[in-house]
Length: 120
Image 1: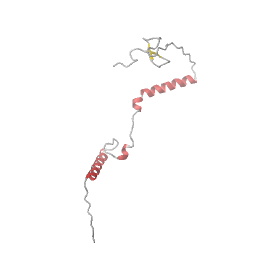
Image 2: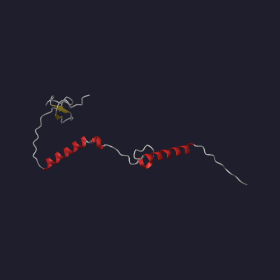
Image 3: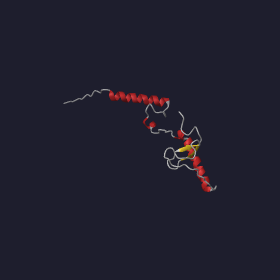
Image 4: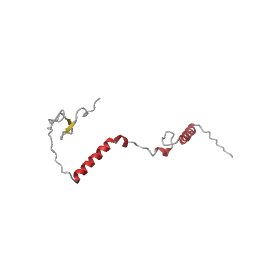
């Protein structure tokens, strides 16, 4: 499976729909929305605003590259319940939690005999 935009070098994007056109397509009408894609000459004067914009762009690109490593969720609430499936527990704590769960389940499902003494 070939990802779109990886065969040819990207040229620019359509200012109407945002579709990225490659060098092979050139500057022509957008095949998606039929908007004319023209070459835009951008003249920028290097200065504080320009440097700030470039640094912001680089920061956003870095966030995009590190997205997979930044989206890990650590469940701090899981250790509160001390269940045997918690990844934060040590092996001894996990065994203790497992035995407590088994004991609680056994007590919950066992039939208790109630004795009522009535004396006159």
